[in-house]
Length: 84
Image (spheres, rainbow, N blue to C red):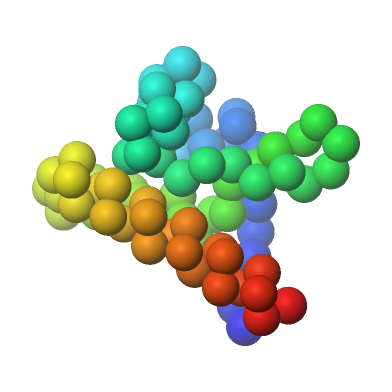
């Protein structure tokens, strides 16, 4: 199993070049992974998911392709949860 590093919002903004409102707009459209709760009222994103999203954008993926990627990432989360 690969090591998972979590990024807080500030780091996600820095890694993607997006603003806070834009990240949440993309989440609502299904073109950005949802954050995970890491305790209390704290949320974060898995670094490998953000990196994969950045690679797809760099490669010129369309919004539909990004949606498929995000759906796959969310399915992988669910599978990992079931396996735990």
